Image (cartoon, rainbow, N blue to C red; front, top):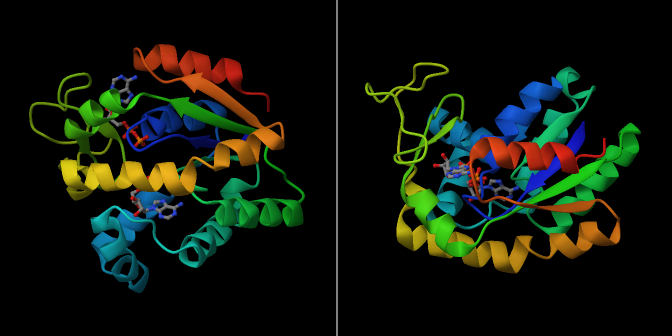
Length: 214
Ligand code: ADP
Ligand code: AMP
């Protein structure tokens, strides 16, 4: 599997990517998770990314592209990968295309999770996230364990600061302006499959699996 999972914030990319990547035995590469971890550890990358993330803006292309180049050159990505939250701009998609062409391993699939805005707002307002492994929960549809700790790794769950309503609106605008154009970009390459992201998690997973070519 060499695939991109795209869609608006809160569409279910992280939820689905964890299942699909595990099933295919490839790493889930989520730029948001990598940036949050760097922020928590206070590394130079994390400090640079923080103000953009807090405002709901995109971190500059050069920073994220550098991060992905380094990550995809690691050995565990040689047999495939599932990108979650990258690319988010046309320059990022172009850089990815060049990197993969250079490695002789082009993309096989771009899956777009289609979820209407009302559902996105509901999902993000109830999201709880594991800051360690990235596993998302939802206070209603996928409630966290009673002790408030991640079922997979035991870390205390948090509500992401950028899931506040004002920041969610900013992120939706950024998606419409900078990321939605990737639909046409990948459709023109014959790679894009649009998948309905509403309904139970398992049903969405089954639709995504059916849409995968590679
Ligand atoms: P993204 O990675 O696209 O931002 P997440 O996977 O973190 O999205 O999901 C956003 C929120 O929606 C989380 O709280 C998650 O538990 C919830 N969620 C994910 N998929 C579904 C679904 N099919 N139905 C209802 N809620 C969902
Ligand atoms: P996510 O976890 O995918 O919702 O991403 C959280 C935040 O991290 C975004 O709002 C951006 O600030 C930043 N981010 C994640 N991925 C990217 C990317 N590919 N390009 C730029 N910024 C990103």
